[in-house]
Image (cartoon, rainbow, N blue to C red; front, side, top):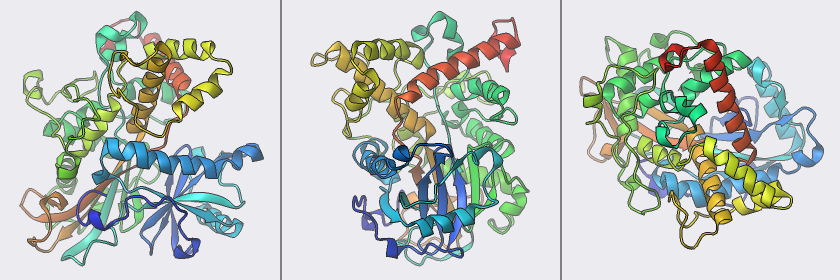
Length: 475
């Protein structure tokens, strides 16, 4: 979690966390949510989150036994790769914990009736297993001292998704549309047709990553309108707003502000401040990542509140969380349309292609030449393609990560609270806040094929919707 007292936190403990340090009980554990691969359980007293991998109901026992190895690789990946790339300012490395079958039964009982219907086809098997222990980014860390705060603690999770368009000149003729509609918006029609989304989201990631306050505000407002799995709000460790739990936002923000006339707009402005806040420890200085390409891009669904001329003056400041995420996302320099044929050709060259490639790519260290678009003098053709595949998988991790922001009203501003942990509302009133990144899973090789297939299917669906080739007709 970025900011205050981070120097007191253990950056990464590779050993298993002691089970007796955690109270796994019906009263201390609360279902927090889940994605496709894992479920999150909040540990209220410890201010931690347990992350358990799910399995399909008919999954082989041998695959279930691989859970501990997967999680150990995950911890190593976050520590050695994602922490240097995304900055230690935004990451607490996770720990592993061993759970008994009784622990898992208790956790499954807690989840009963809480899980959304479209997720229950996967489960947490009732057997001894390992889990990840994470900082609960919807609370302030225990290392924060007693500060003069008041009112509810509000946490927000934003899954921002891909914040840039690929250059037109690198795209094949049949995929040129991807230079005018962002991938998130492109896939919306496909997901609605498949039945995985009930309706099309109004949110566009290019607005959030634009650096323009007007466009960023529109992005936040559209996340409020159609949260899907891109937005969750937690109040005092309880989920109060999400795709499954939509209510009145005014109720959510009740007594968070002092007499604000428009709580929703006021909260959106605080989020924008947090996303653009510069953390000195996150300023790019290690030379690992190339400079980001211009972020003033427009999708056919982007907000038009900011003109192209005005947009040129907006930048994401180096050291803010969006800047670091976008840098890692833009390691995808070739686009999947070009990478997939190279991936297939390399796999065909290797005996037992998938297995050999997995070994090549399971390098838990940052590659020499990271981000270079051209083959380097020390690289063979195979090692160059392997590096581009690895960079693409890293970019997928950054495209799928979640930004966690937690904030609470301060009674007064005290001199010993660093600027990087304070937000101000329109009336100049201070709020304590902190920020972190989660959902940093290493992506498997199978994601390359699925990304290519999903893009092709989404483009076909848009083309079927209209015979007109003008992109705005599709949305």
